[in-house]
Length: 116
Figure 1 (cartoon, rainbow, N blue to C red):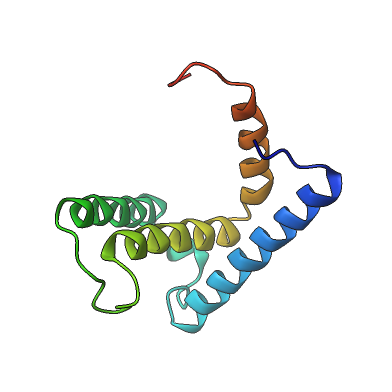
Figure 2 (figure 1 turned 180 degrees about the vertical axis):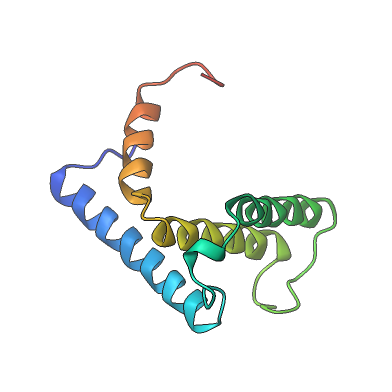
């Protein structure tokens, strides 16, 4: 089981925050944030994240290569899309996602009952 010491935790967080920032900058460059953060509907944004997961489920049911990224299956590309959307959202709304992921992982290490 992977447990992180202080240095590894910092490296993991730095990497996650750097990725999230890169995804957000690309999203801004593509115009998704042109009207400002105040104009973004959080519920709609979460629905788009959910849609990515629903698309992944559909790709599991009907496997195929992704037409936009043919090196990968649609299943994994839809998961990637959902993660990119989540990280973009977290940067925009200043949510400490990397810290939360590390904290949740540490909690899960000691969790033994599924669904707790």
